[in-house]
Image (cartoon, rainbow, N blue to C red; front, side):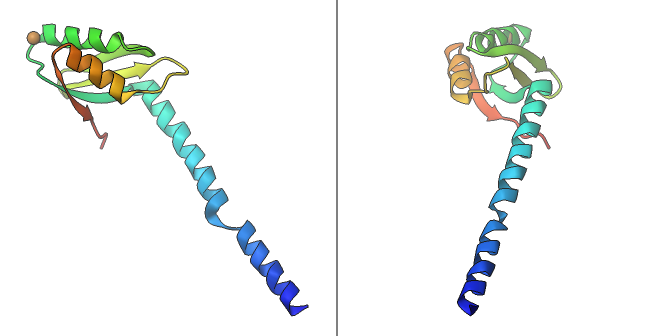
Length: 113
Ligand SMILES: [Cu+2]
C-alpha cells in the first residue's frame, strides 16, 4: 500500500512536470514573434549601401524572393524591413543569396533592443 501511494505521488509529479507549461509559453512566444514580424517586418542589415539607387536595387533583390510581400528601408537605422506574405516564413538563406547576387553583402538580422 505504501508502494502504491508512492507511485501515485510519482505519477502526479510526472503529470505536473513543467513540460506542459513550457509548451504553453512556447506557443505564446511563437504567436508574439509572428505578429511582430507581420507588423514591422524582419529587420536586416545590408552592407555596401551608398545611395538611394543601392537601396532600390537591394529592395528589388529582396522582393524577388518567393514569399516576400514588402520591403521598406529605414534611412536613419540603415535597416531593411522584410515583410512576408501569409503562410511564408522569413528565409534568411534565400534573402542572403538574393542580396549577394545583386552585389551587396548580407550582414544579418538586426536585434531589436
Ligand atoms: Cu548606390
